[in-house]
Image 1 (cartoon, rainbow, N blue to C red):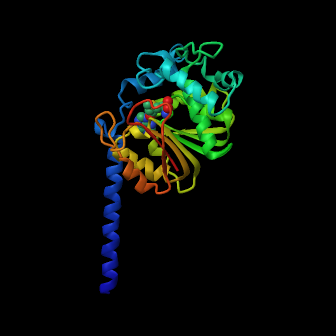
Image 2 (cartoon, helix red, strand yellow):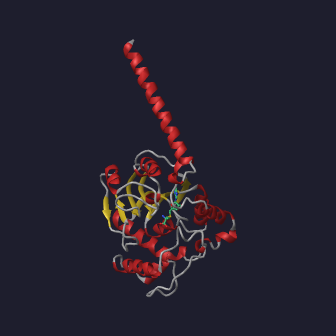
Image 3 (cartoon, rainbow, N blue to C red):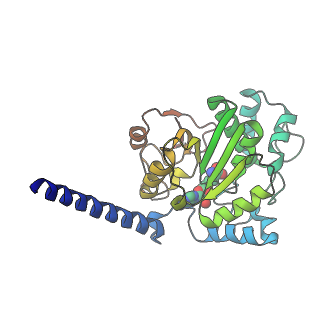
Length: 290
Ligand SMILES: C[S@@+](CC[C@H](N)C(=O)[O-])C[C@H]1O[C@@H](n2cnc3c(N)ncnc32)[C@H](O)[C@@H]1O
């Protein structure tokens, strides 16, 4: 009798713990407190993404819009030249192969195009970055990369370029709900050959080994720690391998918000390695792979 009362008490305690945990998670995810939001979840950028998704006129120029370029599409001409040199020297891509690979990102949304020495016509330097990242992922993981999830995807440009150089079985985009609408519009207008779905962080939880590869460039690292922990449990630990460009420094801190340090990430992902970001776009950046 004493024993069964004890186990009922333990079950009640666990239940209360789980309810409190659920309430905390829900309040974090629905909070308007900036401490629970990334730098890009700033009101004006997600609203612009939503307007671009719904309005053909705004969609036709969104990639050069003044509310959009502080968050994305700001790779400089000099960085573009450095990405081009890596694509040519490390991966042996010819001019024709480069133009062919980045062609889906040269027109839709009217990005600012830069004349880069060695290329026959002006290009989007952001597209060159996506190509360099795609080639690095292919070098690390091989041509068949399976089921992919990306956290913080912009308009989906990385997926479109990765799909040009590797075999993808499916692609899950995870972003803010307003941004997901823009991703849908962009992907429906682009030649992505694999099946895809879009989710918010709240919708995305999956069990272990659901994805073969998790990608997050300048995105997971910009989330506050509470959201990073949710991402870690629901997405990153559910992915066998990963590639994340981190712009929060070794100690963890982006845009005045505290987030996970490299040590905390390494404890959570014991099989991970650190590689250099090339070109280094900010002195605190590193790439985490596992
Ligand atoms: C700096 S952009 C990086 C975009 C893209 N990865 C790239 O390399 O160009 C940060 C991305 O994180 C997304 N983001 C911000 N808060 C988020 C959240 N709570 N959940 C998912 N994505 C979020 C933004 O909408 C944006 O797409």
